[in-house]
Length: 256
Image 1 (tube, rainbow, N blue to C red):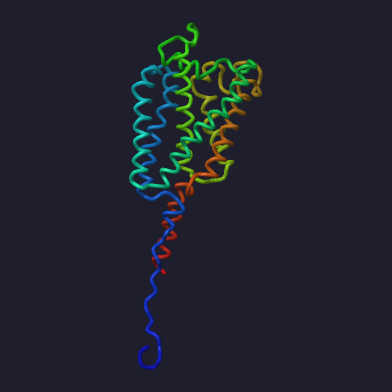
Image 2: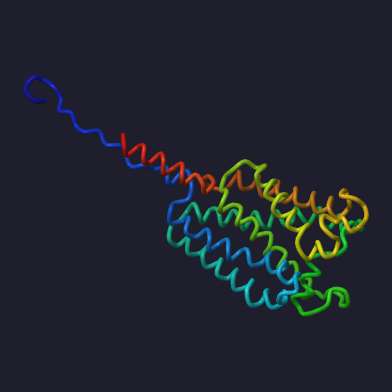
């Protein structure tokens, strides 16, 4: 104690903020999101673009989709190796959720197909196209079916990983909205389904509540429930826009 018995007052310094490691992805991790989104968008967009008559699904699968998923696998490995734990968590959760949601979707989809509500088994149709066969002429083979379902699961993983990397841990019902408003609406308004049945199946002449629309709607609701539930339970950190919230908090702490 100095003379007079008073304590030396030391300046108060705020401890370094830990928000950036707990609330959302770091600034460096955010840089991966556009790359991941572009790589994974190749798979679902290939069916749409080939449906418009631009290129073939076979060429897209072997020359774009497979290389894109190999590159994505490299990113997953890199994020683990470099210690980007939150991003790595979201990627792994997305991959596992993609497998799970595709299975959930197929429970509904195959039920509807076997009841005659859907015009085709789309994974088998895609498999025929990838193998250079004609869906309206050729019968599915074991190889075409395996390849078609591989592509089908690629799509499920793509939609799930894009969701988990952007949204992180968020309410489960956001997953349902994502699956219905984005995936279902896209499927019902874009090739190849819209070419087969019209927008939302309206060309079937059964009104809006037709078997195609209802089956795919319930299938994507099941998809969204699984995706939203798994992301809420296992994904780390909040949505990417929380980065703005983090920046505001950190500026306030520095100013204190």
